[in-house]
Image (cartoon, rainbow, N blue to C red; front, side, top):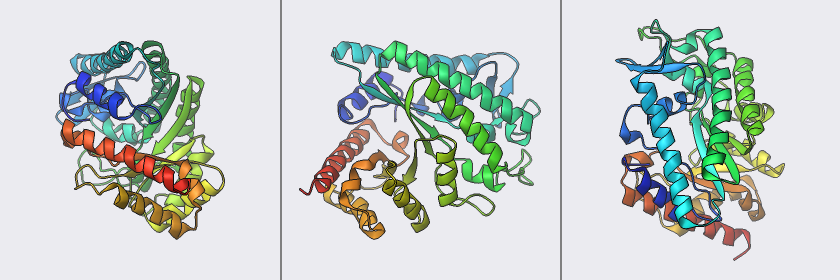
Length: 333
């Protein structure tokens, strides 16, 4: 979300994404260190601490100012959510959380000597275990503080393509780090997903971003592996290639669900009819019946944080209206 005021953003979220839609815990990267995606997730780690250096986030021996800022910001956001829900006097309902996955986190944090955690197999394992334990505690805290009845967790892996394809540069920038074996990646994901489910997550979604370079898995392979290790579903960008849509069509045919990123906040928003036609066109091309439109969950494409609160309201309102219109198509209206 844009801006630095968690109260304003939480009110926008609760106002625009009320029942039957799915509000989320606010994330405000404009606040700076500790509120960015990597720092915020690092605040969840157990027995691992981070600090900001000129080259980015790095492990440190003890919690310092940067780590405390990240923890404090997360605690503030949870407290604000609880206050807004309490003031409304209504059932808090369901809530969506998001965090960086173990692959992207290992590519975004350095070891003490400066190279990425990604470069060391033992460090990758320790990070994945710490994240799983910390994320589970986070879910318990969220449920206790907000009273949310059902939690959905989106595991963001925008670095998956580079990690699995051996395209993450070394600290020097002169070469790339070795690709992580896909079986190892699956083990790290499985540990996290199992911990989240055991902590009460109702649904866990993988959001891998776009683009898989040579050496990495194709979209069909990625979806298959993600479901095999326990993710409930996968998030697909609306501009994904035909192979991704074909695999997702199989998933829907088999009774699965699909989260779809649509409505780019950085571009002029299409009208509701045009937005519906864009999604519906994919369904027709794949030969999917309209009845399966009910298996979709719509998300805005990344980039809300670079807009304004007013734009955010417009995007979320257009998104919910698009979802409502798609539901009418599903019902034959």
